[in-house]
Length: 233
Image 1 (cartoon, rainbow, N blue to C red):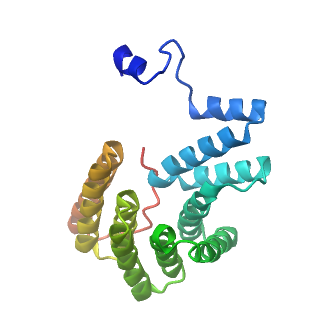
Image 2 (spheres, one colour):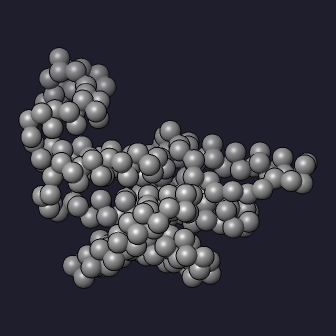
């Protein structure tokens, strides 16, 4: 950003940029609960969309221990924690993640009573992840599709992109690779519309990885498809 643009925004160009950890430390030191809330949600956003689920869960627990105050944007904690917990449960088979994921589904269902517009697609996506975790594959697939439709209807492009992405990963992990790749390509287009170029590039790299793995499988006939719980940065 040029100094001219910074000046026009009313930002002092002499003020250095702070990292997430630095801002978090400032919030802790000054006991600024609002700042702590915002910086935590921002990092959880990044961790969720780049699939750094263990980091997300650790941060959420750290925040919970720092404050018990309730804020309007707390629904993001429910949504992000739910996605992370159920992916971690599938990857580790640890009951603590399953329990957290189920709790998040219950809480999001309660939030739906206040606003179908804001929370319907979130709830359906969490239900899709829970159904997948429980081995209810056919119902999970229908739920992924329904979450995409709901996010599109309510004009949440970024959440529509996330639904496409998780649906694509679900399909790849369940041996429906060609169909899964198409959903991942849909996710890329939605991420681009959202302006998330780095995220779109990360999904594209993942598609390339899948294609290379398919080539290896075809050549060696012994590739075993496992969970794709990789961190994308």
